[in-house]
Length: 139
Image 1 (spheres, rainbow, N blue to C red):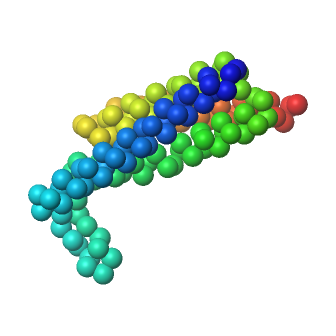
Image 2: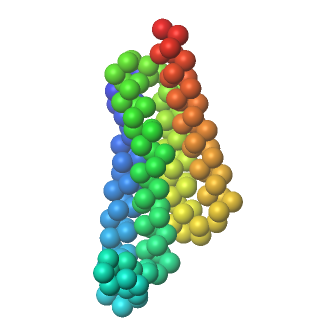
């Protein structure tokens, strides 16, 4: 597969992280300007945020959990030349599931829908790692 085909899902995932980060910053700034923040610990400046900044913050943090395994796998697969059409398709399944997960997380936050997207993404990522491991170990 071409480098562009392999990296395009990564670029979309990274764009999602940046978009969430900027959205989070703006949401927190608006909440602060409206006086909606309650400082609950003066020593550490721990704050209680309104619903929207809290959802955005949790979603943003979530982008540094399972996606880290995706980034690592893409790098390893490229180095070892283990990227093919199946790898790219599963990459897109993972990234599209992350987009859906983030969309639900930051809006309705309906857990049953959000979990469905999460599960699809995790299963795609697990499949990618298993296929990669088998190919490397069987070589």
